[in-house]
Structures are given as structure tokens and as C-alpha cells.
Image 1 (tube, one colour):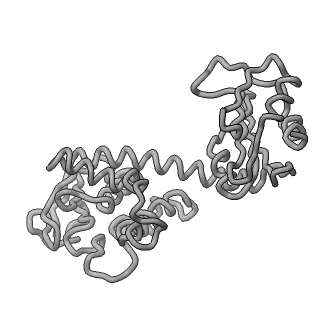
Image 2 (cartoon, rainbow, N blue to C red; image 1 turned 90 degrees about the horizontal axis):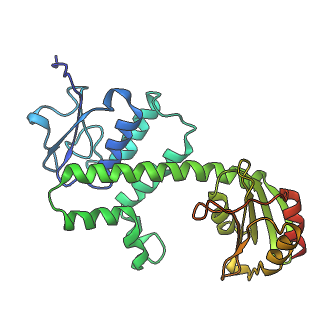
Amino acid sequence: MYEQLAQKIIVTHYSPDFDGIPAIWLLKKFHPDFKSAKIAFVPAGDSTYNNESVDSNPDILHVDVGMGKFDHHHTDSHTCAAKLIHEWLVKEGYISQDDEAVTRLVEVITQIDHGWDNYKWCEPADDRYEFLFHNVLLGWKILYPKQDEKYIEWTINALEAIYKLLQLKVIAEREIREGKKFKTRWGEGVAVYTHNDLILDLAIKNGYAVVLRKDPDRGNVRVNGSNTKNVDLTGAYELVREKDPEATWFLHSSKVLLRNGSSRNPVMKPTKLTIDEMVEILEKA
């Protein structure tokens, strides 16, 4: 028999990494019994909380340590602590199988934990990888040593932001598939009536020459063009100013960003042009 604890405990190793911390985040975010769980630290390896047998008490979960059911260091499988926790939470019904965003988040964490960024991802020595969050975590450990609770707090905040972006990305992918397709002289365009700003960059990354977003509430319009397809929105800029001179229009010096409304300039006046009228302008530009 185990002694039932007043407060549940999540155990990981000292200097927690970008596997143990996401496992903690998953438990705290999706399992109501562990939302307020205490975090405890033990040495890496087969160490356990109070030297108790691992997984002997359901109120104490060891992640990425202890060689128990949520520690992958005794297996050669393509898994990690976060993935093991995710699979368990799905099985227990705390995470929906349809939550594609969290599934994709966990898969990237698993790839990082297996070092794919060092040998499978493109140009692994490029400086841009130092901006990825697991490397930022390493930088924090150098700047602020032995602040394990802080590492968890900072990383959990970042994971919340990443999860939100992936949720919006999943939605954006569907919105782009369902969006209004049109032809321009640079290639295919897509227009979407949505609040979701992620469709702009995502559509360009997926090969569209031009993408148009119209906000259903504010009415403002944002247009992105592809540099790789040599898009120049100058003609469209001139046409929209002619069609709706009262609206506020801005053409970026790159000539691939046409803006009517921005969070950086909340006083910009939205256009009266409909999404179909904007598409017609882009087709002619």
C-alpha cells in the first residue's frame, strides 16, 4: 500500500532538459490532478524520490528519470519522456486524439531529444538553430546556473506559446485548403476571410505566389507575395489606392507586403473593398 499524498509530485532530474520539462508541462496542462503538482529533483539515472520504488505510488510520477514507465533511457525506441506522457494522457482520455497541434509539438521534441537537429535536419551547424528554444534553454543554464525551477517556469511559458502557434497553424492549413484560389501573373494566389494571421507566411511557404487575408471583424486587408516568385505588389498598391482612397494603405519597401491595418498601427482605416474585389485587383496587378 502507498500513502496517498495531499499534493501530487512530479519528479525529474536536476538541470531538467527539453524533454523532462515538456513532460511536466503536459501533465500540468492536461491532467487536472497534476495541475498544482509539486516538482521534485533527483540525480539523473535510476534515482527516485525518497529512494522509493519507481512507479509504486500513482501520486508520484517520475519523468525522464528513475527508469520507470515515463523514462525512455532503458529503451532504444524513438520515444522520450514527453512522448510517453503524451501517449498515456491520450490513452487515459485527458488529451484528444484529434489534437494535432500537441501531437506535432511532441514529435518535434522527440526528434530534438534524439539529436535530429545535429544530423537529420538541414544545415545543422547554421546559426539559426541557436534561436530554437531547446538551445535557448542551454544558454539560460550557462547564464543562470542551478535555477531548475526557473528553467521549468520559462520553458513552460514558451511551450504554451508554441502550442498556441501550432493550433493556429493547423487551422491555417485547413483555411488555406478551403480558401478562394485565383491566378496572378506570378502564379497561384489564395484568399482567406479569417482572423488567423498565420495563413500569410504559411501559404507562401507552401508555394503560393500571393496570399490575401481579410479580417472578418476589423475589415482590414493584408497581402503577402513570394520573393521566390519575384512578386511586386506596386501595381496592386496603386489600384487599391485608386479604388478606396479613404482607406490607409502601406506598401513595404520589399514590394511583397501590402498592408491595410496592423497591430503596430491601430489607427489605420480599414478598406471597404470586399475580398472578391481585392482578388480582382490582384489578378489584374
